[in-house]
Image (cartoon, rainbow, N blue to C red; front, side):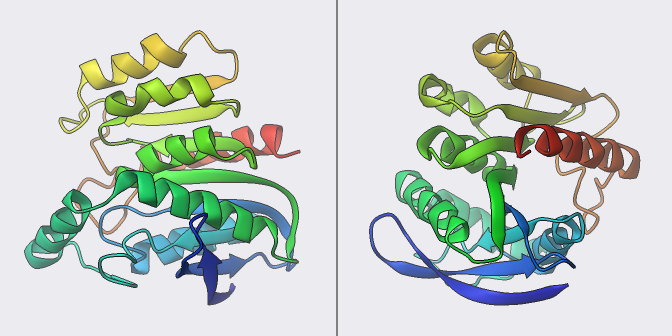
Amino acid sequence: MTSRWIDIKSSTGETYGGYLSLPPTGKGPGLVLIQEIWGVNDHIRKVADQYAADGFVVLAPDVFWRQTPRVDLNYDEAGTKQAYALMQGLDQPAAVKDLVGAVSTLKAQPEVTGKIATVGYCMGGRLSFLTAAHSADVAAGVCYYPGAINTVMGDAAQLKAPVQFHFGGLDTHIGKDVRQSVIDTLGDREDTEIYIYDNADHGFNCWGRPMYHQNAAMLAHGRVLEFLAEHLA
């Protein structure tokens, strides 16, 4: 994949960075890929490249830039401790404005020739939902095991884009009550898809962590591609 870091203009006017990965054709629909708490690390960059190989122009914004620019953490004890501290220090409303700016920045790239979607993981899954709710330029949002998603269900009233959720049935971080809040709020919408993978845990898409579940990851990825093919056409 051809990739580079680019400048993103936040909707509040500041500039920060994001990892841009281009598809083999050099152009295509846009995808804002939103990180987990370990930053735009090697795993997230490879996921960006994976979606670029699927034909998307992918931008992975540096969500923690206001605290530590370009943080790139490992999944060991020290990296995880720092990652949780960054997550706890995140200004969520400012981060959503930053991500709305990332959508606008991606839309303006000459390589983007179609609509734009958001895809995020854990903290990024919640931010994917919020960005889809607050940006009119988001045509579809995908949320993998979105942490604390129940706390932002009030923003569903602003949501116009279709959304897709992926939950691990064994996930103790996101329990049945949290999943149920999503079902209760959005389950009746025709453009909402909610999938639960009974034998998968939190973080099942991350091959760098022990909870990686290949079967669930493949099944979810296929569903995401089908969802995006439908809504970004």
